[in-house]
Image 1 (tube, rainbow, N blue to C red):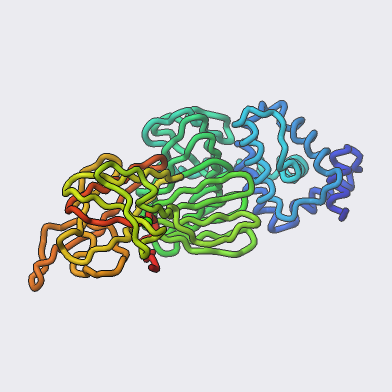
Image 2 (cartoon, rainbow, N blue to C red):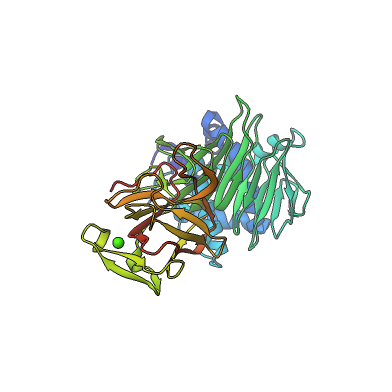
Amino acid sequence: MNEYDVLVSGYLENSLSEDEKERLNEALRGSGRLGDDLTELACVEGLLRAEFAPARLEEELIARVRICLEGHERQENVVDGVMAGIAGMLRGRAAGRRRWKHGWKALAAAAVVMIAAGAAFLRAHRSAGAEPVLASIVGAGGDAVITTSAGAAEGRPGKDIRAGDTVKTGAGGVELKLAGEETYFLLGADTGMVFPRGAGKKGGRLLTGTMEVKAAPQPAGTRLVVKTPNAEVEVVGTEFRIEVRSGSTRVDVTAGRVRMSRDDGASVEIGPGMYATARRGVAFEETPIVFMEAEAEDAALESPMAVRSDGNASGGSYASSGTGDAGRVVFTFETGTKARCRVWCRTLAPDSGADSFHVSMNGGPEAIFDLAEGKWSGEWQWSLLSERTGEREAATYYNVLRPVDYMLRAGRHELVFRCREAGSTLDKIIITSDPEYVPGE
Ligand SMILES: [Ca+2]
């Protein structure tokens, strides 16, 4: 144990002399990083008070601090540890568990800092006057609770959120609009977020739960940053979703790009249709939100659609109907989060006589898909699922096509290929949210 730990332990045992107490306070106040830490802690204090009756807060924290210090070293990065601890605590509360299994050590650090030096710091901090309004609640407030230094309040529509305030949702979510711009935060159920203090700071700390962000383009020199217990996401002007779970932060990007940094300094840029997860032991890289492959012969086939054999087809088989406008191939699949998806199809279309399907997603309108317009071949080939624009190439009179994009919500989906021209073939499909993906062979 270093001197700090000795002093902290002594403080908790109530065995410090007045001199030692003063030394502990000096140690806590003297560090520049600690000053920043305390500012952040000022933010989370409200959240703690929202969760625990004030009279019990100190008692609960001290009890845990004692346990934590037995056999553990002090958390290296106090604030991140604190955030992780509080996130764990909120998860425990959300799950209806009274006992905290994780994050005690971090919470201990929070308690020590808050109790030993924080109180005076926070009082000084608060005397600076009213904090600026950073956001307000739009739409239904759900059952969100806003906690400020003055106490807790119901999250009603129109309610302002000031720097340092915390927002905690229950079973319902809440939508927030940032002041002075068309940027929205949609907080999901059981989500805790702290709004930052400090000039020019924009964004917040997502302690636990999920948030969807629709951000207006940010002017040069402005940083819109969402921090989590183990990562940081910088927003340029985009639409994405963050999910914080135990020791893990996942970011899914719907539109635009974001830069995500992990607590060890590694960073990754995430484009539309892609996600990345910051989690120990997991590769930190851009990955398609949706990517699945399915053989047509394994899908639900409705007669006269039938399985046929071909040594060059994937899996040795494909689906085809000998009757025009009859027979369907029905694919069902699930997606975990919402994403814009495209479908690649492997087909054999030697000429324009048997090369089209009617395609629909989730019971929507059918589009005519010309399998190999202008690139007919005796070989199996991949084509991006496309629809007719109604125009024709001037020289060739071929149909002009445009790729079909499906905006899929989280959940179960049904993609149907209905035969159009008899003998049209479907071997395999790939559904992906990666707009740059192209199949090999
Ligand atoms: Ca096949």
